[in-house]
Structure formats: structure tokens, C-alpha cells
Length: 549
Image (cartoon, rainbow, N blue to C red; front, top):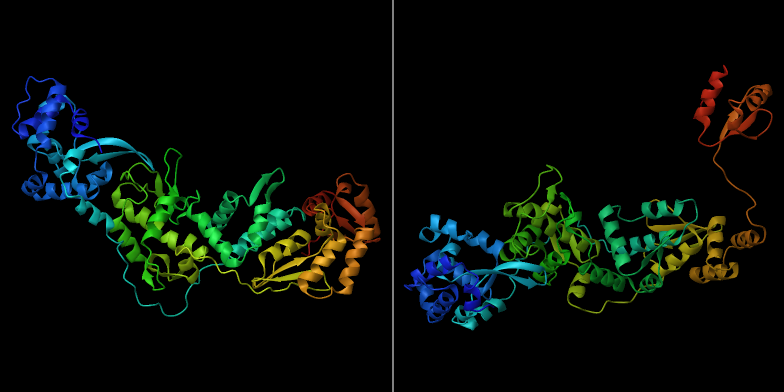
């Protein structure tokens, strides 16, 4: 904390003389340094406890609040509570004489010499503070400050457990991330695997997918290559862990991630790049007040608690006019402390019902605006710093004669990742099972990764815990020897009533380029995606082609 002399030297000489007049000191004719010296000695001799008792109630409350915060408070936040101090140059001060009619308790304290302001470096950057000089702060009993600092965090009151169906914490985040890592692994199927990977996520929320991909990148589980994102060796290490250990690691990663929860909060739009917020501050504020019990609580009560005890949790400077956040429905910018519920309140709700629910930390009942929540057993263990449980039943895969491979939704994630190296993902109704299929493209991709046919068949047999269907084994070995022996294609077939029509169409320059393979005297294939142009060209030749599709 700065000393009285350091504080006073920042004032204009006219301000020093006004403070001197309040304490019946005649500083007229003195140079600034001499006035600072005289005033500092006088203020040091004050009995601050006695002065506090003589102050008007509002000024006394402001000074006591400043002392309880260790003698320093962010300017914007303190202004919101106790009014502002008008900063004036010497000329304006002489004209308006603000000390005669201060507009706030803080301005009154300012001209008594009890309040000063300066910029300080903090963990959140350079912030402007009001402060009480050290000599004046030292006159207040330190035990008052310590007691205030040591007060236990306010507790939420539990509510009655909800009735009826509850939304469980979506602890399948590890399954969706496994799907995304598997999709990044494969390049075959003309983009089919990438599309299937996205479509097969258990939760289609784009913000949830964004969070999982961001965490994977920050943890070094995905790397950027020319062909796109690829899983890394550290991703394989994560996949080999138990489900709870995987969730603990995701929760740890989220707690310190740069992923901006505010800009993904439903109902809010973040604009511009000339401002920034620290997402870790908001997460810390919420996690710090959560009671580590298995009781149910009201989300509205949590929002009210943080508003009453730590409203500036994500804006340490207390300023609510520097961020560019819009309401998604009205398109209006949300600025000023009056918008706290629309910004901070929404963010708190999103943290509990969004990321913390997705990661299995919380369990939610009801809509976000009027939800009840509690910490899950996993969330309690994670917040309590316990070691994750690492016991899981090993569920074998199922290999069918038709070359399909089924992996249960609760099976080992590393096992599914290995299956994804050799087979293409398919969609299954109900999404209770992940279905893959061996195809020439997937076998080729496996070979490119150095996976031999012998190794592939051995893996399938071991992972399924039984002998492979002989037909499947024979098909894989035959493909290895002969390659692709047949191909399925999607085509449009033109059938005509007279063979001469086909010859005419094949010879005419307007239609011949559309003709594909002949399927006999009366049928021919039309190149994919060109049948409409072909039909129009036929009409120009005086021939209508019917479309029975």
C-alpha cells in the first residue's frame, strides 16, 4: 500500500490546500512538497477510530468497507456502491468548489484526505483502485480485517429433491470425444467417415462439440496436418484410461481452458476483438461457492448468491461498459450493471447446465431458467480432489459374417478407437451401439497404417473373444490376394422402347456425352448428376423422357 506522502504527491496543489482547510491547516503560500509534508504529518496523527465515529453514516460505511477489503477496492465497483469522485483540473475546481457540496460519500472522503486512487498491477492486468494510505490503514485493528477475510463462504440452502424424471449428467462426453478422435483418424470413404463421426455424436449440441474439440487440441490429443486434424500418441494414452479418469482429465482441462464459456452462452452474442474476458475467473467463482454435498439446490438461488457476494467475479475492475455483448433476441448491446442478470446471470446458468453437466459434474432437473441441480458423485469426487475409480467391465466386440462389427456404447474407448482404424463407422438406430463395417477402403487405409491382414484378423478375434466367422476371414484374405472384385455404384438408368433411339442419342453431339455404359439393346446408364441436363437435351431433339423417380 502506498504511504501518505506517495498518495498526496499525486494531488494538485489546490486539492492539498482544500484538504488542509478541512483540518484547519493553512497551506497558502507553500510549495507543493512542503504542503505534502505538513499534511502527511497532520493526517498521521489522526485517531482514525474516532474519526470514523464522527463521519456521517454513508461515509462511515464506505470507509469501513474499504478497510474490510484490506484498504483497496476497484474504482468502478466502489463507484457503483458509493457514488463517484469527479476528477477536475485546477481551473474547474476553483470555479465549482466541489468540496462544498460533494455528490457522493466517496467525494466527501476524497476531500477529507481519506481516499486516493491509483493504478496497480494484478493477476488480471493493470486495474485502477481506490485505496487508504498505509499510515491510516494501520490505525484500524488488523483482527477486523482478518475476521472478514476468514469468514466462511456463504452457503446455499438445499431444496426439496425434484419429482419425476431427471436429466442425468451427460457423462458420455468421453464417448463423443472418442468418436471425434476416431473420425480424425480416418480419411477413406470420400468424406463419409467425417460426416458419420459428426452425425453419430450422442449430443448434437454444436457448443458441446466445440468444447470437446478445443479441450482435445489444448491437451495435445489432436495435431494439425496437411490432411486435417490427426490424433496423437497422448490421445491414445487418454483413451486407454478408465471412464472416470478420462472425465476427471476433461474436467481438469476445462477448469483451466481458454474456451470462452461466455461467448457460447445461449442468448448472448460476443462482438469485436478489442476487449477480452478471462473464462477461468467465472469458473472459479462458481466452483468456489458450490456446497460439496449431494443435496439439491436452486440455480436461481446460486445466481442470487453470487450477485450478492461476488458480483464482479468476471470483471475485476468493476466496469460494465467496455464489453461488446449483445442479446441474441433483441440484438441490443448489454452494458451497465443493470445488465448483470442478462450477462453474468446467464453465464452462471450455462456453466452449471452446460459444460459442468456435459462433463458429468452436475445433474440437472428442469429448464435452465428455473432449474434444480446437484453435484454428481463424480463431481463430488473431482471437486474433493479424490483419485478417480478405474474399474470397468471389459465388454467384447461382436463380429458378424456380413463384415459388420458392433461395439457396445459402454465398451472400452481404446478398443473402439482400434476398430475405427480398420473399419468404417455406420449409423445405428437408437445409438446404443457403435456399428462399423470392413470395406475395401477401410482395409486399404489399415494397410497404409502398417496393419497387416494377419494382425487385423488376430485383433478382431482377440477383441471379440471368439473365432471369426469363416466367411469373413475368407473375404478378407481374398481381398488381400486379389483386391477389389466388385463395385456398387449409384446410377440413373435410361430404358427405351426401340434400340434405334439409343443409337440416335449416342451419335447426337447434344446427348452423347451424357451416355454411360450400355446395359443391353434397350437400356443405358446416364452419368450421375447429369440426368436433368440429359432430359433437357432430349427435349431439344423432339424426344420427351419420362422420370418415374
